[in-house]
Image 1 (cartoon, rainbow, N blue to C red):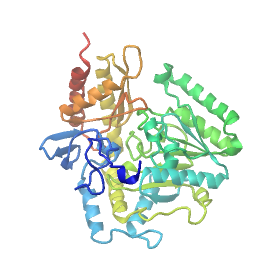
Image 2: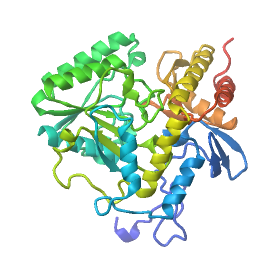
Image 3: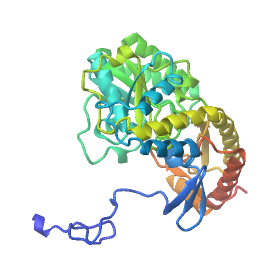
Image 4: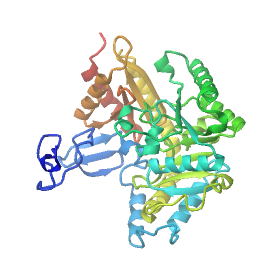
Amino acid sequence: MTAAAFVPRTADGTDASPGAPSARLSPALKQATPIVVDHASGTWITGTDGRRYLDFTTGIGVTSTGHCHPRVVAAAREQVGKIIHAQYTTVMHTPLLELTEKLGTVLPTGLDSVFYANSGSEAVEASIRLARMATGRPNIIAFHGGFHGRTVAAATLTTAGTKFRSGFAPMMGGVHIAPFPYAFRYGWDLDTAVTFALRELDYLLQTVSAVADTAAFIIEPVLGDGGYLPTPPAFLDGLRERADRHGIVLIVDEVQAGVGRTGKFWGHQFSDSTPDVLITAKGLASGFPISAIAASTALMSTALPGSQGGTYGGNAVAAAAAVATLDVVEDEGLVENARLRGEQLLGGLRAIAARHDQIGDARGLGLMAAFEFVDDAGDADPGAALALQKAALDRDLLLLTCGALGNVVRIIPPLVVTRDEVELGLERIADACDAALGVRS
């Protein structure tokens, strides 16, 4: 077929050639809801249709202080009037200096050097670049179900579903995947799953990626797109022990779990272990694009000059919003609120789950909770997850699905969510479950 004979079409079959009258969003984008937002505040979104929706998605865990928190809005507005883009390897700006100082008060002891980028994927790639430079080793070990981004290197680390890595092979070399201690999937207790996963990791180090070739382990403290599965503290501790023993860099991807979402400031703090590299993004700036990796100065100093940078990294407006976000999180006690409201949320979800056989598991840490759906044979049931999401939307409640098999519904309220809003959300979830799944007789 010649180029002249090819007429590109959109998903609905209409002409998408350069001569078409208007541009459209890519058909590869998949919308979870049909809502067009007009405005939003706190835990609520108002659509252009005038309907108000209780938002338990928060932009996939991004709007940590809720939509349009007044202090974050004010900080961004003030900064826009001063300077919008001050490229931070050309000229430094005060919001980034203030943000670095603020992060220093919440980062784990010893992680005293910070590099800024824009997205989680960029920060992930910076972390593995650093690990390879620091160790002189080529290989990275990630874990089943992890989500680390969509750029080529980050997607190679991602096994939260084939949709994130199919169709553009070859992927980056040097990446190997080890089992995650997914106790529910295996039908085991947690201790058995942890023992199995650590044993298999040791086997991988003996058979696939030799210690002398392994630069880093990378893991989320709670799997995000992989199904909202908390990483057992004993597993993180096991990774820390092996990293220390073998000279491997431990990277903890806190992009979604960090900044208070789990009821601790960082999700890995449920364990006794500290990472060598911590990645943060999403909730750091309440919706403004900024990400960072933190490491010790000694480790960061192993990076080659010029290997870190980027045109928009550490943007002045985003940095100002991040400073305001961290102030709000501290001043309003949002980490503790996430813990308390998370306990309320998980208790309510478990009570709902007890009424429906299709809900195989109700789990979570803080305001990072989920249902996992199974059929009568105990196999994944993505249809039930989609049915609940749609039934919730019909009741003006926004939820998202996730999981490698699409059978998990995740519940992600903002850190500012109130007791009454959690209760209202639970009522709507319960009603949606009854409508989507039926009521046990």
